[in-house]
Length: 468
Length: 41
Image (cartoon, rainbow over all chains, first blue to last red; front, side, top):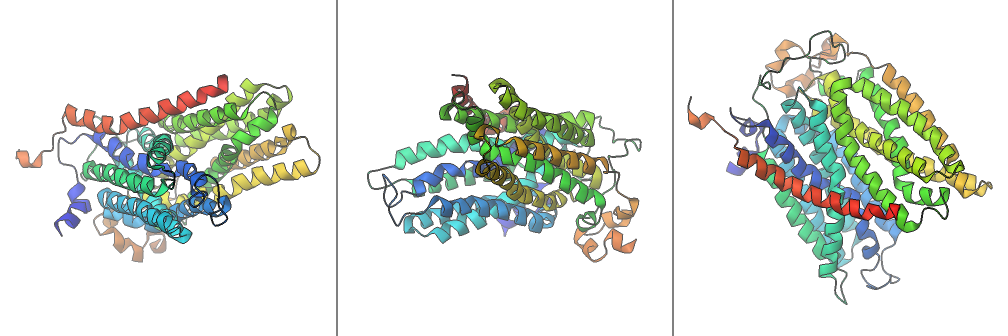
């Protein structure tokens, strides 16, 4: 009972003297751990040799079967962030981060049992379902907390946390490979032991984050901070209830903006290695392509922090205008770099594109905060992440199928991606139009003053729009 | 003011907290950067 009350929202309210700069490390404790998801592929090949050890045996799992683990995790990320968003917001960050830690570590432990028993559905359940739920809850909770602590720099604050999600793979990838090499024996691949160690380490890190996290006391403001005046039309001082936000055109316009921006980036991110080698045969070797992918990951991470921080100065809507316009120009330039054989031009184009892909993720929570206020921003963010799930399907499908179609119709491999690049540029034009139509939320959706004093759950029965 | 209602964050706490997440992150970034250099060889 004592431990449970420690997790309550009331127990996480910061007392005077607490520095808000303790919150970004707390957020990073969670995001660096769940960011491991991007590095899960390092286990794929070893898990195809659990029986054969040196090479795949007939009863070993196939790569296609293992691919479902990551897909399930990302699917449940979207589902859990949408379903548990309101609970995360109302239960407070400590409870959410503790739950995420239990699910994340539990997912690894169940997966370890699955590897020992060679039972794939246990890994689907462990890493895919339980881990996916941890991803959803762990992703939105620190972001929402940071927005409340940094009303003066919400972009920079959320950029720090979401940068951690991108950076988690940098730690997990070498760590996992090193652990597997330590546990590897002549009769054993070492995946199960690695899962157990990772589960313990991640649980410890995430629990530390949940202990040091705090939420600001009601009415708290940073020293010297003055809330934006009414002249900033796209920064609302009013809160919108989570399910009322769904009724606004702004939510769906931003949903499409995110979906299209992510679709454009995620497709090339997954195919960067193959694309670079096929567009520049003889110039980019497989080893160099691996280096290119690593460099893209760094720009993906750096873009999350830099673009979100820039958005604090130029505004969220303008930042997305930059993503759409610059992205359009760069996607149209890529086929040209291929035709003139400019490897440097190709690399620069994609590094900027991928930085904007990351920037799209990290700028969107602050965009939502500007539109819908801070109170339910975590829950609304959770609902918006369904756009990510959608883009995760669209992006790779567009790149792969259009390339396949072109190659089978006699287009040289070096030019097989040109159509895709123009389609991506077209998607960004649609994104630009959606972003153009984002205006301030109608006042009838704002929560009323009397709602502020009541339990938020009470609003579920009488949302603002229903009363209006 | 009652000191029980204060929660003063010290510089040491901030350094430890940032080091706790910063050191692994920098390690990962450096590793990735080293691997990425193959692009320029």
